[in-house]
Amino acid sequence: MLKQTSLQISEEEWLLEDRFLLLFDNVQFIYELALAQLELRALKVNFEVTNGLRKFKVVEDPKDIDVLKRRLAYFKLVGKEYTHYFHIVGYNRTRSVNQYLTHWIYPYKGKFHPQMIRALLNIMGMDRGNVVLDPFVGSGTAALEAQLLGIDFIGVDISPLCVLQSRVKTESVAALPEILRWKDEVAAKIGVNLFNPDEKAFERTLERIPDERVRNFYLMAKLVAVSDRVRRKKDFTKAFQKNLDLMILSVRDYNDVVQELDLKLGNVDIRRGDARNLPLADESIDGIVTSPPYSIALDYVANDAHALEMLGYDLKKLREEFTGVRGKGQRRIDLYNEDMKRSLEEMYRVLKPGRFAVIIIGNAMYQGQEVETVRFITEQGERIGFQVVQNMEKIIFGLYNVMQKENIVVLQKADNLCDRSKIFSPWSIS
Image (cartoon, rainbow, N blue to C red; front, side):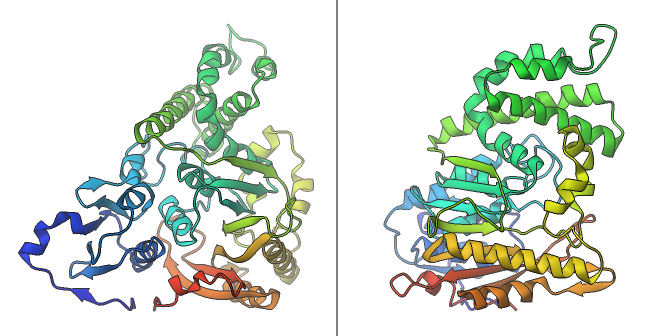
């Protein structure tokens, strides 16, 4: 339970709107309320929670109210003004509240909740000039949220599909004019029909595009259409045209929100690489936020086989490179644990002293047996030299979720001169 006293407030106090912060309506879980409060502590706000748990009373004015409006994830109002995040989530072309801007592009299983990532970046103390790493970048959620906050970001993944979609989500906004210039020519070459009998016309057109960001954008549009055909049995050509239009609208939205809010985007560097052998210098990273693959429970190679094959990759070879899909039975679990140990060692190596590595992980069921991944991560982290400063449970809802519960594990690399762990110490979840 949250160790925080709620206040009863009077009608007069409700009128002092400039002294209150209002949560988003969809904040409903205990872990979200905890993260919202940790955000405020990290941003040095002295506050008290009201009796309704929706409004927070600011006890003394923060030094920079504009910082709160620009950064907060779980609050929609600071005083009488809407936060940047409230405006950002309004640019959404989908039916899912979490798939605003380019987040929705490509149906990837096991995505981060972007609001949570934004909050965690605040809690970790990340700001302009810092570099955040996600060594299992996946669908690029952390990359996009760091970019929106003006934080530099490095993403690494062994999957070429993950690298491609993460780049498209974060790089397309800067290439929008060229994307629009090539639209008609590229779209005319998709599909084989009476007017376009050449099945290689699309690929040859892409080869003529000089800007790699533009080539990646249209390749991603094709992969989304391939996914719709394989998973939803939709007509490929119609799916391509529909998704291409939607992708362009989403990139336009991203451009519009940058202009509207005068955002200074962070630099994003997405690389294909191995979390077990990071291509980074010692103590070069200011923060890590990641969710290792649940490969014991979910076979990422098989799940995205259609896209990986279309990209020209050998699935058997990829399987030998991916974490968690090698071996069978106990051997698979042993190999997964070995890979995670090496990945933790690499995270520790590249992280600066005093900084945090936040790992979102959950136990998985494999062959009817629960694999205690959370305990393994915390124990191995401590053996390597990390301090576990928080282990917060979060519940996962949804019909198709492989996991039903995850943990937000916060590890800190020791440094006597820099101890931000006090941000976490007053809080516990039961």
